[in-house]
Image (cartoon, rainbow, N blue to C red; front, top):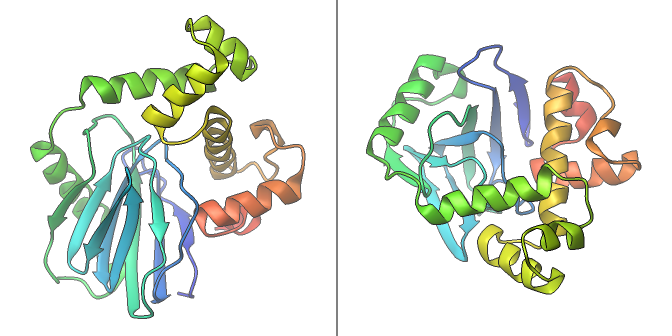
Length: 231
């Protein structure tokens, strides 16, 4: 493994893909969200995330479940040796907030962690997690309004009975980013899905400039579209 994020499709229905990191510290990345729930397992070192204005640290021997659609920003960590596995699982069940649990210090390498281990940890977290609140449902509806329509932001705002300025304030409050930024993140997730399906060109995700897509993809997911597709 190298000092970078490496992605691999899991070829399973219950795990969408895996990603792992081994190196000094870990990368800081742009705020983003996933269409899947993200299970973060830290074997050594630590991972830190900026979520809802606060910082949450996942120490070694712990796992965190970041719900699908939750905006989070991985933060750079000190230059301690860090080994981490991310597993992206379908969002068939949901929780309202990031959940953190201890799994002990059983593993030294990510290849020691089986899919069954991953699913058991995710299931244990979900079994004790609170159900999504009404506010989370409202966020999902607002996100859907922005991603399912190709209309300009002003037209989407008008369809919801809001001015553009009022709609922008609501989006920042509920989604954490401006409407345009949310749409950009949704397009990056679509590009990731297309690449995962074996499509080498992600023009269908709405990026006309490949270099722009490459820069944003690397800053958001810690690798380039070309490397992600080959993995």
